[in-house]
Amino acid sequence: MPRCMEIVNEELQRNLNKVILVKLRNGSEIRGGVLIGYDQHLNLLLTDTEEINQRSGVKSSLMIIRGDTILFISPSIL
Image (tube, rainbow, N blue to C red; front, side):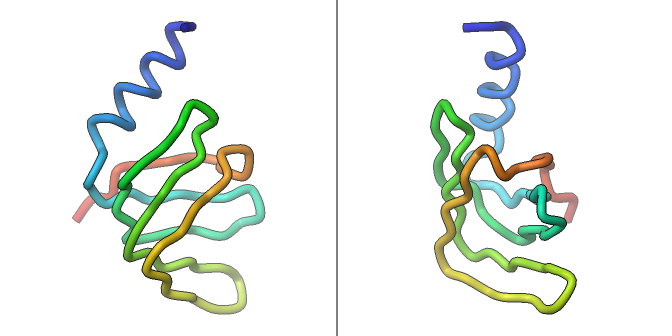
């Protein structure tokens, strides 16, 4: 596995069961989501999320985000 993927895997593993912020390529943000799983394609499984886009905010209890739609992932600072 390339070193950059090892680093990404370590960071995601460190943030399992913690709140993260995800910014998507379409400009939406996923806030307040707890990372409960991911795979080698960076598909994410989040719970207790709120999607914020230019028009509205939508709350969801469970969300799957395709890895190819993600711009960045950040630990949430509370």
